[in-house]
Length: 428
Image (cartoon, rainbow, N blue to C red; front, side):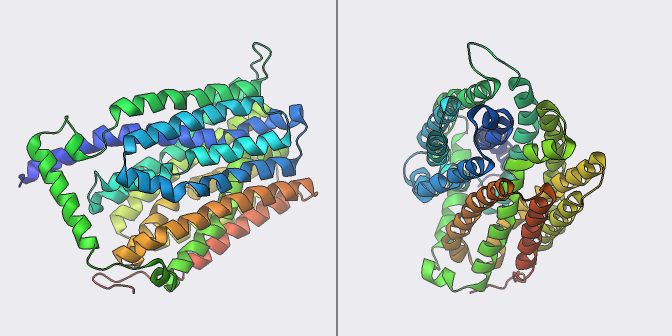
């Protein structure tokens, strides 16, 4: 048994060794997933793609993602996180870069579908990977620090993409260089991951023997305790909280994913400005999201509340987004409302993903998280496709934004009915 000061030092050592690389990988993943929204400002014009074609192409990613999501997590558990993540990074980087050469809607759909297949298993694999390194009481904090990579990647990706859109080298358009420049670094990171990432504590040469033994012992004890009661998928599906969580994130992500992918196009339409200015304003939106993630994590950790932090983030996103959609207001005011939306729109996921473990028994949570995440990704397909359909069929920007605002509000309403266990209670 290690003394308390040695345990604290071990926690810091593990966090500093594992988290920076994982955050960098997630940064690359989210940028390569979302940069199509930046490229769209020029790509649609050059290829003469309609709004609906783009909406479907963006959404098809999530269908591909669902195929290998659960098998990917199992491979991390039973094979090797290091090798599996390296494969994911190299393949998605190549597919993302290859998107620069699509010419037809069918090629665009295929590229987006394959990108989803290539990236599938990464997020759930990371969740499993964290169980190999972080005891349960530290896992939520590690996850919330990783999620910070989402607004950071988008906030930095927007201005970089704005610069790349004006590049015309070697006969390639700016949007093509955007996919190449932002896709190929994932390939490099895949090679680095193969040599730097460590699968489990017992493989870590950078830990002392007693540190490896202590950490393996703590994690093994937690794993044994979870086996004392096992819930099947069928039992989990009979629990009201499972369906409330699944439907709540489905409603919220229907609006959230569409907003994330379509915000550059929406800002360009509202402002009447250039592509570059639209991307720079989009960067402000995502930068506000970074502040929201950090504050939400701090506040929910300090108070111990997860449910109402989640609901507040969803409800505030809907209200601020609705305010931005009011017709006739000047663009600076609409942009101010959008920045407030960005502030709170990224604040709800961290407390949300703590709710399954707070509202269900450990085994029921394990059995239901996959189902909840399937609903989360199906919403990504529905929201982005439906938004493109609305744009193509003459709906105004205000109508589209009001629809997204309603999705956020509905999600918050559903989550408000989730029953959180009192300390020591269990929800069977």
